[in-house]
Length: 261
Length: 261
Image 1 (tube, rainbow over the protein chains, first blue to last red):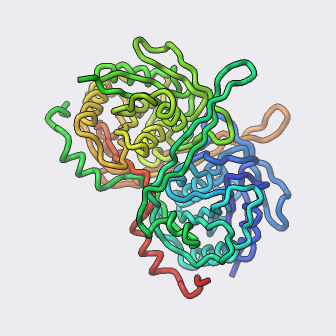
Image 2 (cartoon, helix red, strand yellow):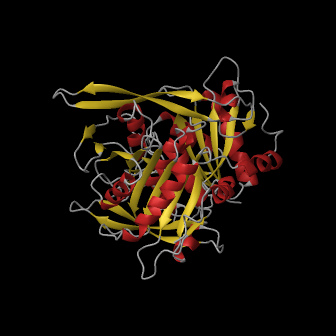
């Protein structure tokens, strides 16, 4: 039987350390093809490139791996891979990461890592985004490798619920090993923005986005709890944003007489 | 009683025709403040600006309206508005658009228009994204104005379900008037990408993203059906991406013996 074909992307760029770890682990499971941004794209959300051109260049970066870098976003990379690089052979799995930094809770919306995985899910491929809750460029990924392998293997063997991508986060390297896996929901939390106001050499004002993560969630079934308690968190994510419970609420609350033509 | 304060943003940029229509309608409902991108940001998804500076400049663009343009994304604009422009008075409503082009179905993920509205919802403000299913710069918005007014008025009067933003789409101007409003779910559809391969004057390859919208949905309770049948569609959207139904499925399907530490 032929080995599974695994597409790897990320949002930190093709030269980041996290994607190298992910490529190495995926080579134990199948044939690997990389299509990833040519530079950092953190916070790019589910952006795609409209009204601008896209570059796609093959590069020898990883041993025994076909790799392309692109000027596009992570979502562009998956689209380009599907359309061009993998036009003759469909991937069995799409993985993205390993991100340098947490993508738990509300951060999933801003995450380029997860946009590649969600783009994969839209196309019907089993897709996983992996993130390490450590933002440093020199973060230690060693404790995540066996978990990445095991999770990807489960997905290759069992497939994935339709319309779903996995958002996997790992706790930072601590003294104790990771305790296990929690399949959970997205924690209720948000970023409390702070902007730092500065002035350029010409006296013109500019801002830097900063902010603090604020967790409102008291539950134990969410990703923030899992990470805080040294578990890897897995949140199944969907791209149908419909708040189904709100459909009837709006129908009840609104004054439909006023809303007639 | 003081008039409600309404924050207006968009993703086509502060000089687009759609935002001017929206500002005019909102002035009938309250005091208006605009914070919008200084240029087009279509397809920007829920991107935010990390690792780069943000400009924010007050501009006299609209009569009797405080307006700022920003170098940031729509989500940045809402964050900057909250932190800086509206730090002394909270908005009663956040509206985004009117987008030049459809944001129905899966397009909500790629939409900068909706990212501003969803950012507003994350912050707990009633928030609405408006889009016209006509991509042309010279699109006719005249048939949408009364509906924009009525919908915003309902939201100001009745509030919004928690954690929800409205994705409102209007059909293009047709011979017959808009029939009414359908509150519906996001249609199951996707973009079938095509990339056009070209070569620059130096012989280096580049791509343009193109694509066709493919609607798989046979139902009549979704936004694509509503637009095709000359209704305005309203999809309540949530920012909790958890696929709750998949949590138990993964727990059942996976081999947890193999996933032990």
